[in-house]
Each structure stands twice: as structure tokens, then as C-alpha cells.
Image 1 (tube, rainbow, N blue to C red):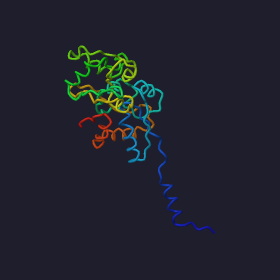
Image 2: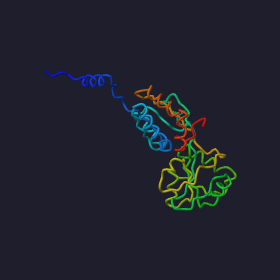
Image 3: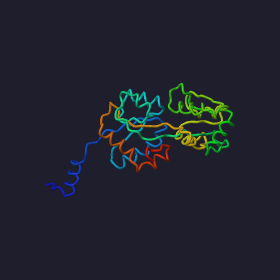
Image 4: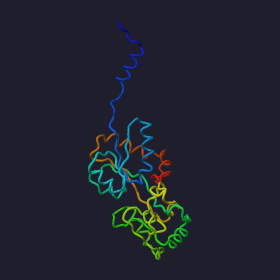
Amino acid sequence: MWIPRRSDFVIALALLAAPAHAATLTVLAPASAQAGLTPLAAAYTAATGAQVSVGGGSRAATMEALKSGPADVVVLPTSDIAELPNVTGMTPLGRIAVGVAVKAGAKVPDVSTPEKFRAALLAAHGVAYADRAQGTSAGKVIDALLSAPEFKGVKRVPVQGLAMTALADGRAGIALQMLPELATNKDVSLAGPVPKSYGAGVDFSAGIASITHDAGQAENFITYLTDPKNAPLWQQNGLDLIGH
């Protein structure tokens, strides 16, 4: 007759006590926010065991994915989230700065001060940025910046899509685009952020999608994102967490 060993009882009890496999938490965000979200999602999974999937892509793709689902947490420019009826509990995250880049291999300008930044833009044969007619938050911010009197004389190159594409085809010598998007692209060289005194950045917030399957887990993840201890990781990936 088979007599169960003590270890068999331990294993059986452990299996009975194990929680049921939780569904993956789906987070939607544009590429500019994914740079920080992806490592934070991995850290959250390591700490809690909850699986997190980060997707979305462009702002338009993120908005479309939110309509079709599934989705739990949405990270978008604050102005966008405020207008979405299918997102609740908006929590401010922080600001992503606009960055300055040139084509890979080109001389990288010094943009460390307002004066040097202005001189670099005036010297460029074209300054590319997202056409504000596309409705992007970054495009509106950059268009307002370049409309200031001190930038009169800058050759502006509004682009449909990513500003960096105008570097590749020669339409522009400088691209202004969300910093994380430039920092992760091997086809460009990052000069740095637009000097802070210009306030050229986009505020981002996180919200819970109304179609979420687990509002509690979604809220826990947002709380994790805004934890002050994660400020350095956010900053490494282009976002200044609120209050830091």
C-alpha cells in the first residue's frame, strides 16, 4: 500500500493555498511614456506577481486601442484624459520634456542654455516638429514655443507624423520631439531637452479604463507608478514625477 510522504502533503497544501492565476493588467500609453512604464511594469510584476502588459504606440493608436479594449490603465497627456468619457480616476504623473535632436553622425549643437538653444534653431536650415493640426499635445506646445518673438526667423517644418523623419530626408537639421522618443532612436543624436525656462513639456496623467476587468489592481498599479521611490527611474526615462 502506498503511504504518502510528508513532502507530498506539503506540496498538496501549497497547491491548494496558491491563488488563482490573475488576468494580465493591460496598460495603454504612447511611445513617449512607454520608456518609463515598461521597466516599472517589470518591477511591479517582480514585487507583486501580477503580470502587466504595456502597449499602445502612437497617441492615435492608444486612443483607438482604448475604444476596442481590453484595457485597464491608460497613460496619456492630461489634456487628452480629461476629455475621455471612458476613463475615470485621473491621477497626475508628471511632465515629459521636449527634446532636441539631429541626424545621427551630424554635429550635435549645444542647447544647454536658452541663448544657445535659440542660436542652434536659428542656424538650422529647418526645425521639424509635429504639425499642431494633427492634434498632438507636443505639436501644440512646440508650435507655441516657436511662435514667440525671439524665434522669429527660425525655419519651421511642420511634419505629419514623427518630427525625426524630416532629419532623414533632409527637410530639417533639427527635430523637436518628445525626449524619450528621440533618446531611444538610433537614427538620431540627442542634443538634450529644451531648456526648462521655456516650459516646453507635456503633462501626463494615468486613469482607469471603464472597461477594466480589475479596478482594484489598476488602482494599485497607478499608486505604484506615483510612488516617490520610483522618481529616479521615471527621470531616467524622460518624465519628471510630480513633486520631484
